Length: 570
Image (cartoon, rainbow, N blue to C red; front, side, top):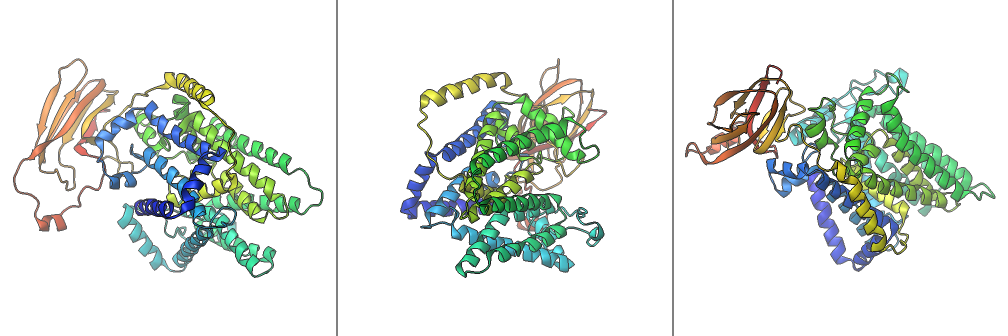
């Protein structure tokens, strides 16, 4: 993903500077309602981080470099800024794709359609090969473990009763779990159907028959994947496509606008109500308990910063730094609901803009889809509605392979309608009112700042380099150690730990490599400053042989200072 992010930026720069239409296209887009809404969403995604300054201070504990920025995961303070950057890149990528072609089909370039369809075909072929040969599964698992350190293999959900035991684990192709593979296939679906439509029209073949060909392919792959969300999305999209086609070929149908407005209001209302009802009621007892927990945690974070949120896609970081120590944190690092992800990250201001973009896409898509010549719009808006419903159970911005396709689909439906002149007299008072209303929610204190509890390695705990604090609810002891269990560039350097406990003076400890120290702590807030001495204890560095065959070098972006363990209820 890091390489793909970098190559996307390089391609955009090349397309922008080599094509004379690119700058004009970008300027026209930025003056449109869609462009202003996109800029506003990106702005709120950044503004939320200024409302929770702890996320900026947390940068102190991480290595600052382009590599670690692009590599950052959802638990790290770089991640919200990475998602803001990738959102901006996705928007510009869509514009540059259109600028490189004279007549892009449905405002989606033929190159993009061909590229996405090719990627879809490769992933499907690998998935089928994975089903037929366990050796291919082993190779893919080895690849994932080498690349990211783990792979998630689960048994497939029971989608068809008599096929429940036909496979010990689901297929997932180039993805590390089945959910992301299923989401990627759904994100590709409109591009695949557009490619088939373009192929059939050029050869004057029967479009109705050829559009049905991918349906059994998607059905079969979804059964092998064993994920329920893609099935539901395909069903909703297919049902809506048939309904739109019925309206388009019905003589005297004059209610395209009214039907579009009704669909927009219904879809948006249900999308907002779904997580609220699911989290706060027992409407579906015994079903989706983990998602209910995730929705409840997302709503709690939204209530604590409702205007600007915590920073775009910051649920994972806020869950670790705030909710975990309060006893209401979740095992997973996403709410698994795109509406809640946006609400937590950008607050009600960003959520309004996000739903505005969706409303415009669905309305405009339906308006053109109800006309006889609106075949491409019927495909796009049907797929978009299926994805919109699927986003009630998953979030779409974690992977670039789904996020970029998401934005291309959404922006192609929205178009570039020019916005009415909105001057500073309008938007400055609105921004001022939002800032004033957000002041009571400024700066949520962090509960375990400057620490790292690896979610996939229970029992490991680390103090990060720099300042930090930890809430002590019960008296007890803490054991500090400078031996981290793996080789570091600073493994032979002394650690200087200066800490303060309630009603006592500051204490300074100096721990050499492989040294441990135990301290007794009362109830209260433990505050510290952990530093690594600039001078090594010995002048003998690691030899080439030790570097090659010794323990792996720490791959973490976090600057780990000390290992610690808690005892006696601490």
